[in-house]
Image (cartoon, rainbow, N blue to C red; front, top):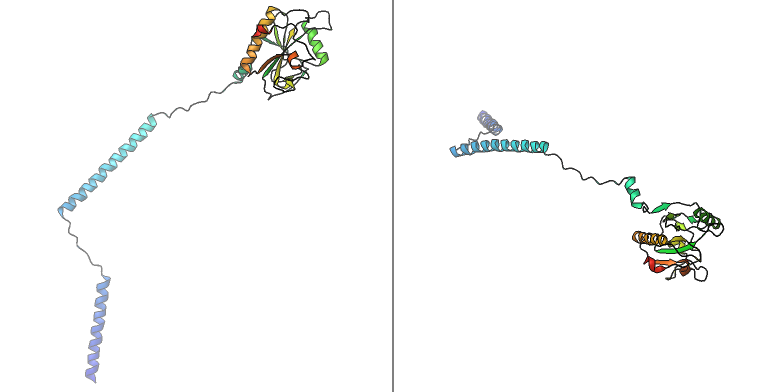
Amino acid sequence: MKKYLLFFSIVLTALVALFWFFKVSLSTPKKIMVVTSPSDKINKQETKETKQINKEISQNEISTQEKETRETPPPKETQKKQVTPKEKTSKTKIADFIKQKLVTWGYQDSSSRKIDTIIIHSSYDALGDEPYDLEGLLDEYKQYEVAAHYLIDRKGNVYQLVKDKDIAYHAGISSVPDGRMNVNFFSIGIELMNTKEDEYTAKQYKSIKKLVDYLKNKYTIKYVLGHDDIATGRKTDPWNFDWDKIK
């Protein structure tokens, strides 16, 4: 019996010793020896030197770029020319030969009408002693609450009574050859001082031709007509007008 107990003790001791041997072996890290060849050392040295060179090149490039950025001025911004109020006014300024004498009657304000017709009239002061008196004729227009855009006196002076953009009451019940009615809405009216018996002066013909040409250049004009052309049977002016002189 003692022999068996002794044998069992020896075996158990051996097993415990083996267990601790394997535990220590597994927990201790093994060092792996790597043999470096001379060529590997050279390659590592070259790699280190190459990295240093590349680093210096990169730093030089960054310095150069920063220098160029500091030395090169930014591109100038293209500035749009701003139109001053004076320049805007100059585009809508009336011609030098036209004198403004705007009236306060005989028209209505407008801002978007399309002008394509010019109507020529003739009139005189039938209520006063002097048929060609400017103020007397304007008083007559005022009494009847009518007006044309322009008036040309016997000396050829051109007066603007109503702005082009506004609707002047000069045509009355009327229509143009293409059938459109309400001619006031799309026309410019021009009055010439003259009676039914007199002839127009040379200065008047010169001025009306100049005015018509000016308006044709300013607008796309389809018709240049007399008052009698748009109100046949109701109106007979412009009296004694020679149309060939404004062609």
